[in-house]
Each structure stands twice: as C-alpha cells, then as structure tokens.
Length: 328
Image (tube, rainbow, N blue to C red):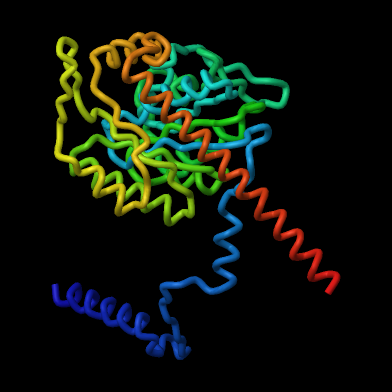
C-alpha cells in the first residue's frame, strides 16, 4: 500500500514539474519539457493538413443552414417548407439532411429509394416537389446509427461533396441539435452564406439557440435571422390570437443583432402533413403557415442577393485600388 501511494506521489510531482518546466533528471540525462496551451507554427501546420479544405460545391451558388442548437423546435419542418417555398419562387433548390442520427427529411419529403450512383461514383439526389433531396436515412437500413465523431464527419463530407448537386441556386441544409461535429464539418468543408435560426418562444429554447448562434459567429458565418416557431395559436372560429409565451424573442434578437424572419403559428395540419410526406406550404398554400414561409423565403433571397452584390462591389473596388497602386 505504501509503495502504491509513493508511486502516485512521484507521478504527481513529475506532472507538476513538467507543467512548470522544471528540469528532471532520469538515467543521467537532463530533460526540460513544458506544456503549452497554444501550438507552435509546426504543430499548427500539421493540424491544418488534417482539416478538410473549404471549397465551393460545383454548380451550387448559395448554401443556407437551418440551425438551432436546441432539439424539438421544428428545424426540419422549417428546412422542408423553406426549401419548397424557395422552389415556388422559381429557384433551383436542394435539401440536404445533415441529421445523421435522426434523419426526418425522407418522411417529410416522401422519399424512400436509395440514390443512384453515376460513373464517377457520385450520388444523384432524389427529386420530389421540385427539390433535390439527400439524407443518411436513404443510405442506411432501418435501425440506429451508432457512430463516433470521425465517421459522422466523413458522412457529412460524402453527402456534400460526393453528390451531384448542381445546378442549384440554393442548397438548404437541415442540421441536428447541438454545436458539435456536424456543424464544424459543414463550416470546414463548404462556404456557408447564412444561417436561419429556429426557436420556440420559451427561454429554455432561446438560451440554447443563442449558444448555437454564437457558435456560428465564432466560425464567421453570417446569421440571416430567427424563425420563431410555435409562437401562437389562432382560433378557427373567432380568429383570436393566443400568445403561448412572454415576448422574450425581441430581447434575444436584440442581443444577437438579428431580425425575426417570421412568427409561425401552431396549426393542426402541420403534424398531419409532415407524417403524410406533403409539405404544408404545398397542400395548404393559403394558410397562415404557408404565408409565413413565403415571407421567410423572400427575406432569404433578398439577403443572398445583397450579399452577392456586396461581394461584387468589394472585388470591384479592390481591383480598382490594385490598378491605381500599380500605376502609382
């Protein structure tokens, strides 16, 4: 017992010496090791080599991510109806289900066949309701996906860069809850034009959504706005609007410096349409739900157009500056 305690003490002292950079002598050789929280230049280069290269998807103009950080707030419902609404505006749209462990897009978009593969071993997304779709739920048999992080990152990279997405105006990506592997893989593999945040109006959901927004801010991905889902109920008889929570969204959007894209009501047809595989925006185009997503699609298109114009102006002035500097 004394020998065991003595070994533990020796190990603790050695670890403390390493942290402080104190020389230790073993077998007549003096060594000095110091633990550093920041990698040196060589370590940073080695780490960068292992990361995927952020490259645009061939034939895809814009990529929009639907995210929250919080589960159960309606991200997939938002992604599906946003994609369909964008298609109704005349855009070529794709929908990628980034939820590896709990894919729901196949059911909501009424697709079930495995995608075909071309001569280059590239997957061909399925098309329904005018939207190209791809999901892990189409690639694996029924049952849970029990994978660690590296396999999840490889799957995301395969779904992104191993498929024939183009030509597309907008690719909408539905993401799982949390701030982990999927979100990092997306930001490392492709340039994301913007994020549509989704949250229900209670503080418990908004707190987690705020963390998700801060994650994308850290990754230098712009935020398009916030969709307040399940915001209220409208009575079918008297059309009286019943708010389901205190007005907390305004305070959170001010802290995040984003606008509220729409306040989506709860409607009984939403669950039935999702289970039946028909987007609500198509089956009930005159509903408040469909009109809300039409407004969201309009704002997303405006955001992407303004961003593209800003990039053109930036490169124009940069080219003029370089030309004038060369003449000078």
